[in-house]
Structure formats: C-alpha cells, structure tokens
Image (tube, rainbow, N blue to C red; front, side):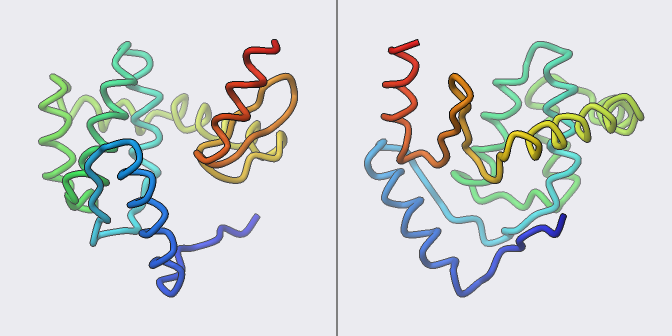
Length: 147
C-alpha cells in the first residue's frame, strides 16, 4: 500500500479546515511548521502508554505539543521533555517501544484498520458502518443513540 504524503499545495485547505474547527470548538490551534513528522515511534508510544494506563494523557500531551504549541516532534529532546512531564523515563520508554511485541501490535492494528477500510483519522465504526472526519460526528452520535 502506498502512503499519501502531505502535499504542500493542499496545506492551505487543511489549515483553513483546522482553524475553522478550532474556532467552533473554542480551542487553540497552531499549524505546526515542522509538519509532517515521522510518527511511528509516537504511535508505538500510545500502545506502551495503554499498558501504563496513561494513554489519554499521552495522546493529549503529544496532540497539544503538535497542534497547540507547535513543538518540533522531530527533535528527540523535545519528545523526552514531554515524556518526563508524564512521569515516564524516556530511556525505558524508548526501550519498550522498540520491543517486537509493540511493533507487532501496531502492525496488527494497522492491518485490522486497513481490512475495515479505515483510511483516515478520525474514523468511527458503529454497527459495521464507518464514519470519517470530525464534521461527521453528529452522524456517529445519532447512530450510537439508535444502538
């Protein structure tokens, strides 16, 4: 499967949409000048954070670092500071996310998503029906209520 890489010419539409959503939700949004980043280790990190029961905090911290604070998540020292703020030892964390069991779990979840037809985030599957993109959340909520 070939990945679709970020196309700078389309960035203005993405930025406009993100700003519109942030304005509606009354949240701070700053398009990250370091975008795109290699997110493989951050994704593996979510799996490790789940094991430590801090996945929500982990995702929130890294999401804010990327889209609110505009931090350079290509810089390992920046990542390490975020991990420390979560009371995670960066050395142990990097050792854990390098383990084959974590790598295999991410591959499995990625393959499962592909088999379900998931192609973007956020995606929601309710009663075998997929909803994609944040502007479809009202459809997701309606489907959940009917469940």
